[in-house]
Length: 218
Image 1 (cartoon, rainbow, N blue to C red):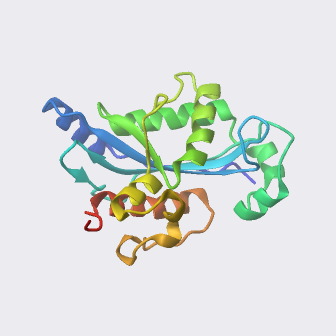
Image 2 (image 1 turned 30 degrees about the vertical axis):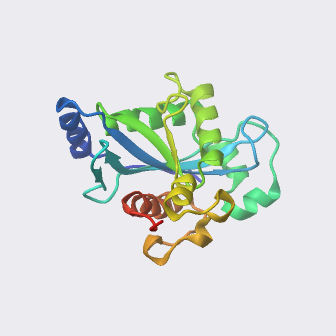
């Protein structure tokens, strides 16, 4: 097995964010994240793969979905510890033994991800989003701070929780704002496979659908 990586780039999207910034508007560039791990927390356990999908931009007035097939970043990493939970591997289906041999070094992986994010955003401000955010943010932030020479491209707080957005717009408590509560018009076309890239692309659809949704009437 060779370490799997996949990166798609879009110069057009970077130029568009530069143009918006030149007009004096602050622009957020959203990246949907999905991670697959061999345990519950980083450090004692390892991130085995992650994907980032460019999911759109917002200047405070207009939300713009990607105009083409959304640019993506996917990579499989070498584990950083000996500890793992078999049940976590059963969910994601990754071969941890093979990744110990062929996975990308975490320093290389996080620096490559940071360069891709910065290229994609141009002068906009990168914002990480996930559903829910807490798990994916914890892993990526820890790995960026620990292994990336520039630290986190999302700084310490540039993040957007889709679960909270749904709770507010649908007037639901957080405990009732999971994926099973999604209305039909908010559901994605893609399936959930527990492959990081598939799931990031699928849930980037959910992000855009919820962002554009006006919500329920009071």
